[in-house]
Amino acid sequence: MHADHGQGELFRSYLRSRLAVFALVFGGSAAFLYGAWKRDPLIMAASPGAVVLGVVGIAWFVADRMAAHRFFSGFAGSVGLAYSRHAELPALTPLLGAGDRRRLEHWMHGRLPGGLTGGVGHLVWEHIKREADDDVHVKERNRFTVCVVDLESSMLRFRGVYLRPRLGVFAPHSDWLKRARARSVEMESSDFTQRYELRLADDQDEIGLRRLLSPTLVSWLANHPLEPGFELKAGALTVFVPRALEDAGNLTFLIDATRHLAARVLAEVEEGSLRTA
Amino acid sequence: MTLAAAALLVLWVVLAYNALVKARNKVDEAWSGIDVQLKRRHDLVPNLVETVKGYAAHERETLQGVTEARAAAVEASSPGAIERAEAKLTTALGAINALAEAYPQLRAAENFQRLQAELAGVEDEIQAARRIYNSNVQHYNTRTQQFPTLLVAGTLSFRPREFFEIEAPAERAVPQVAF
Image (tube, rainbow over all chains, first blue to last red; front, top):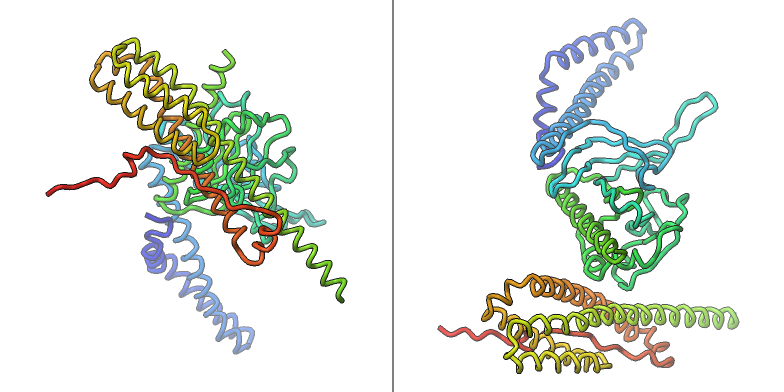
């Protein structure tokens, strides 16, 4: 299943709907008459075409949104999650506070497979510029897929671990960690280092990190087909891929990756408390 | 013009040298990752032997085999020697598993189960550390053998590194199927 599933069918049904037919007939006629009133043959010829294009465009847009809504709400139901078209989360980790404004779309939340409380969906974050007349101009818009889980017990041990795919020279999005107080760390694997950029909050101890990123986890991350990044801070684990996932297979894969990472974090927290005891 | 070409050449040599040093350091770092996991494994073995002794004290030969294999593994220093010693230790630990089959009380002992689980975890970590090490060795060896970096590697004694395989000889053997 994919978010585009059924989109064509919806599009055709919208075009056949009474509203679309009325819009085409009355809108086209009105545009033609307006051209005649203006005595402009160009408007008479082109404006009905523009009306048709407008109606078709709107039908396509609505069908696209509706197909996505159906897909995500269906997927949420199939894994026992509640669905909200829009949501907001506090900026627990740097990514959740990225950009000047942000929102969650297709947010599926509740008890995730594996028993963790959290949610999965699209995070849209934007850089905006306010004009002198208070108009907002979007300079950059990014859509990531995130899976956020509550790991409150990790709060004291992990103050800030940020792992993300390397941005490269021609990064498609800006650096949301630029303002975070963090230092870079390299792991022992070339494959991992080539793939990921690892940063630690200034007050995060490196030994804890090295224990968390055991060889098994490093190797797992270096070979994971989704190339997921994660951020662990303030008792929240945000696992993400820097693109929109819109199919059931990859969404399930992301949830599984989150479960795997969360299990590793919790195991390390438990081992840590045993060591302390 | 000649000066600019010479400067470029020197710059390239410096960059190639730094890249080789970085790759070699990654190999060393990955090796220390294996070393840590092997040490964890060696530390678990005496506890395992003591636990088994409590249930199967008269299986002296097997336990002695494990102790000797562990001692040899601890003593080994070069990757090749470690590889061979660890393979022997893996085989010896396999014999303990076989013992557990014959002693249900041992198999059911909580301490034994915990140690076995811990050992299995360490084995996973060793396998992962080995994969990381071998991938780094491949990366480093490729750099030392590629033209034109090999000119710098050859001149400045960047020797190729050995891969590390750790598995019991039994695992390497081809299964014989009789029809």
